[in-house]
Length: 90
Image 1 (tube, rainbow, N blue to C red):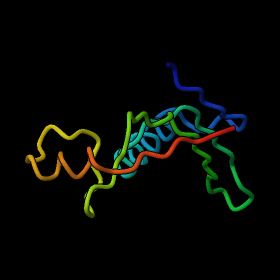
Image 2 (cartoon, one colour):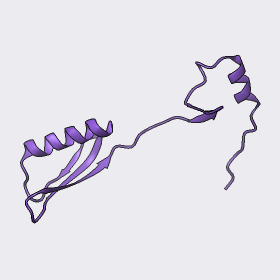
Image 3 (cartoon, rainbow, N blue to C red):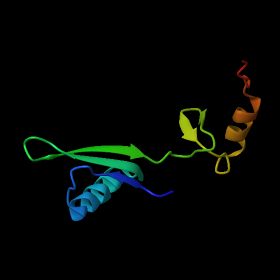
Image 4 (cartoon, rainbow, N blue to C red):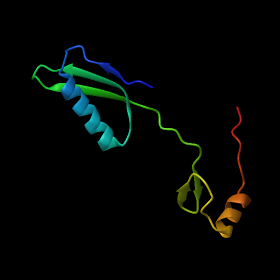
């Protein structure tokens, strides 16, 4: 997926690339769309729209948030197996 950049005030490309790289590093996420606007005091206003973060499943087992059970011992696996599973109805 390509990143969209909206830059109506023609801010320098080097500035835009540096800001995107910095915010992606700080947030540990990828930018999907970036908007840059020049403000009256000659600073830039930035708006970032993020790439969706995918996940398969999160379960809470005795205080632990996990995606898979592959590292659990037999007792933890049994606890998960014995749980009452609720379905979401429409």
